[in-house]
Length: 126
Image 1 (cartoon, rainbow, N blue to C red):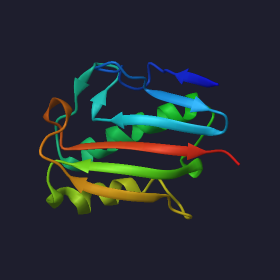
Image 2: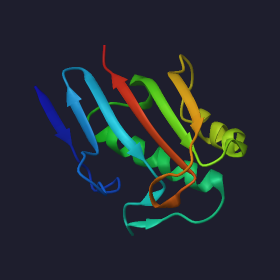
Image 3: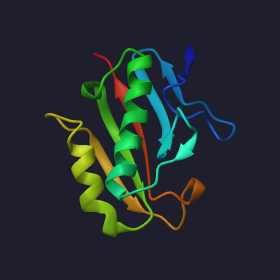
Image 4: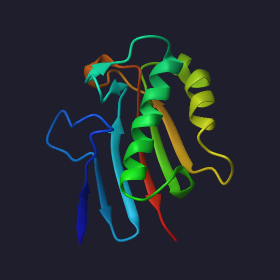
């Protein structure tokens, strides 16, 4: 059985998908982009500012489902250009203490709303 996870502390979906779906002890969070859920506006500023908002959005969804970054086992990072890798990696890494999740990072031609970073993840509770 699956449960749809929704919180107003993360941006509302901009298409026909859920913010997150939980099934059993697994949580699948859809790609988050740097939208401030309070204003529904894109974050402007540096790539680090964008990455920070994305991680906050992911954290809000993890928390809503009763998970934390310690439960994350897999992430996917999409970048508008690989030149952003170092800055995004620095922000991303600050959310994990050890036992880092598996991950891939790819540069793509375009992202929703022309943002520079999008991150999705999978979390599991033991």
